[in-house]
Image (cartoon, rainbow over all chains, first blue to last red; front, top):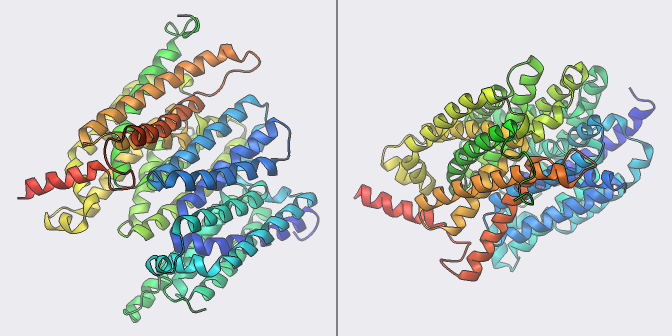
Length: 277
Length: 307
């Protein structure tokens, strides 16, 4: 379990969990579950297109996920953002379907793009994952306070002169960056579950921002390590385990929050309310 | 004529079935979709399509009809989302996302089992992207019956639906069971999503649900006009998509043509983009970021009724 190709899987999995936990903290806080689902899912079309014209799938993923982030941001100015997100997503998926039908691709490859093939990560794929992961973390660190403020208290943020739409686009670009890094190794669907479940659970346990963020990273790490071990033992897809464990964490978090608020009803434990870390 | 309709378009039985099923599912999706758009439930609508994928992949695994799987999965998913909590906007998104993620994980497992069992080749592509030309004509009566169910639910609860999307207080004041309305509506959504899953594949059925409706809500000022326009746009894009896909067998000689769902979704996307343009250009109505006319109209109606 700890030799050969599995070493790569452990390394990449750990990296993905750290980025997923940090970005996921803001995804949950800002209620951006839909774009966090739409961007990775649509970006799979980019990988399919890149395969078709024989370039590195990472380039296709990058083009599609950044295009999606900017497109959703631009169209949301004029339309309803949830409808715009849905339409951008299906448009990219439809392109993906067209690319797949044009290529002579083998079905397992489609499957691995959508649901991940972390157990087949090669050493050459690790470097770009690490680079993009670092870029993501730096971007989050640079935007940490404005993002936090505009998520918790939009009116105060506006009074301080922060532009909510620009911040939203910047955040979508961060999601796009995380997407590009993770889709080739863990699949379009896994990164979404990894961003949502652990962070939502962490925000049930504490309402301090810093603790919640570290908590979500820790839970994401435990989730992916457990999922890797189970996938290795059972040969079932790793995405299945990650999604089920993430949902289980959320269940535990909600249970804790309910139990906690019964003991101390004044505090709503399921919401980050303090800027202090 | 031959330039537009390649030989055999109208005499082909699969095409005729496709046109009928396409039209029916487009109308149902568009009507349900208008309410989805007005209630800002696009994410839930999309999530139900993914939950339907899970049902479809499970149906493949157990050798059942995919339609039953799509709808069964959708209804179960709708129940789960309601159970976790849909009452608060922020939590609603989260609940939707969690159910969606879990469903996709389970779908991954079933698809993996489907492909390793080797009994069904092409299950992933067939389920996710669909092919309206391969629909069995014997499912047409079932499709029609389910369409009636979905439309019936929406017609029966259309007023409480609109009022509850306006304000919770107004709803309570009029003694409407908010939870019941939400659950019934989710079931109607699940049925309509299941239907369009056969037509364009489960992950693209979101397009039929949201696209025509979002364009229609942008372009019209009353609920009735929105519903009519959405249905018309849905049928038009579906039929054109089927035509283009059929013709593409002849355009691209090297392959088996492009998928129907690609054309339908592209047309819908173009229609949505154009609806934004004409809106701004002709300047009829208000800025697009304000509340949709449908909602204002409904609030006026409800005041009249309540007075």
